[in-house]
View 1: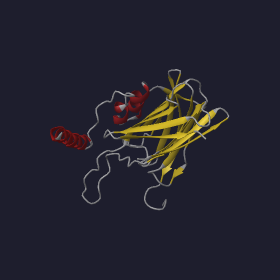
View 2: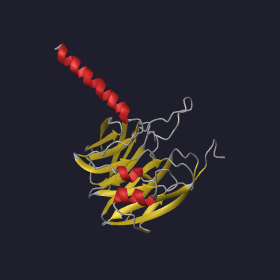
View 3: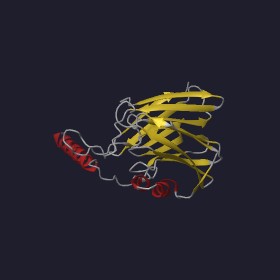
View 4: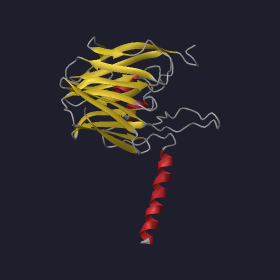
Length: 156
Length: 103
């Protein structure tokens, strides 16, 4: 019994050590489940962000996408963003912020039956556009809105 | 562990789910004020939502999602009492999940 317990404890510390090593800012290798868009998140530009998350960087403005974001974000650490669309056959939505060091904030994969609607809160490093990109019927459509970010204390 | 709060309401054939997760969501670029060292990236990378066992959303997240992240989405269908399950996985391999019934 002791022998097995000892082995278990040994491997537990090993896993702990590995986890710590992995967490030191190094990119985590691709996971199989859901094919995490690592390249999209590592991209420093909008084009890379879109290619890596939605498979293309060609998108056209669409008035069938509603992007709700504040005109001025008092706190750049918590900026509420809501994306909704009346386009048909929406498969995925990406929220991209060109002014951030890594523009891709998130991508949402929507199976049939899920509405084209996501709402979340993002970090913005500075005043920048926010681009909501919607993939519908294999094509990309977008809506853009500038969000001013006031940094440093009480909005001034 | 209860790091996930879920509110799910069904109205007119559409269920709206709102969820709040407890997570530091460190980008990996922030520096510790005392030591000057970079705080390593520690953020949720994937969120999956299930309705009665069927996937209704998969989200890929980067460090730019705010700390203690909020997420809301909607899907067609869902009736009062149905189970909604939200699970997350982070870049350190940690994970958690929570369940709630649709109101």
